[in-house]
Image 1 (cartoon, rainbow, N blue to C red):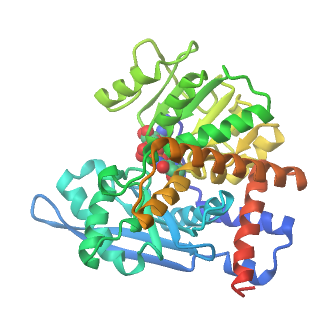
Image 2: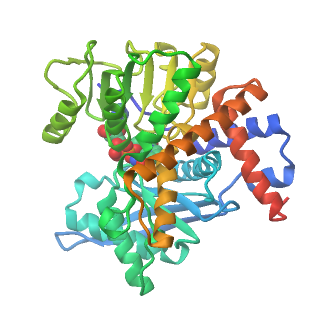
Length: 415
Ligand code: NAD
């Protein structure tokens, strides 16, 4: 069985992280007070005509956390467990993430409570267009810019862009990123989260002296996790374990990632992959690097002690609960925090917007070159804060982020 994922109120955890960070850098009260809640939080009802003629009403959210460094930025999640606390936490983390990689964007996030797998393609399109109709007035290339997240993809972004432009009456491709290439998407955006992760992991592996044939386990085999598996395998890492929502598998000699992706495509999951053993629990499996690429709170106080990896890599947002974070730090496990580890996606989203604004498109090689520099610089800046404050990489990243956001707020006279 895949590991159990619990909901522990991610926003509470995110606020605790902020409080810890604030104490370390003596953030002034006037700024702290403004960072404790989103600037705007929308809840909308989205009526959708179902194929059988009935109308079903879905609940959607958009959280606009902070825009002192630039327009709100963050994905839209379609998932049955979407809730207010999760959307708020994710929007706060987006604020920090954009600051960590130094791109001129703020933080936002959206979601709809839905299991998209239960909808027909037509129903999914009407829901996607309905979400845009509901939040239209609050979106724009200079205001708030959505992107894909869990169970949303470029196809959905294409529908959403089309709906937005129809309502607006003219083109505005920079309102959404993660679009298909034919309508203003960026080269490399499809695998940019994982690619950014690989750049960060290479830096971390060098600092922590991990060998290149290290054994890697990956929880979650969606956009982020499957691309990470593919890129790491190509770099010589041994991918020994992989899981998704339906099961987990292990092969000590290393999995053939391309064949596994084909198996998942065909059967809908990673389970029952030929030559691999069924795994009960990927979190505690025998590996050197554990990549978390599913959802929040995968590692909690319940399972943190079972981790054998020396390095935990947060490709997902918020996969380690605050309590588990302390347990792992105490056990000497290094954690590469989400706001650095998975920032490659939003970095290329920013490149996508830059290309849309100039209506001039870059090659894949140009995008990757810029991404590598951005991620290396972010890693160095985080590492520098970690050393300076003699703390963890997570707090180093949060210190860097809060410093940058707070500076923008001071420069606007908001202190
Ligand atoms: P996705 O929907 O493509 O994939 C999610 C994967 O997690 C699926 O394989 C699903 O089966 C698996 N999963 C769900 N529950 C699980 C469980 N209990 N155990 C094991 N696996 C489980 O989503 P994604 O875009 O890859 O996003 C994954 C995480 O990465 C999320 O936290 C997301 O916010 C974060 N992230 C994604 C991007 C991006 O560009 N895709 C960018 C930044 C952060």
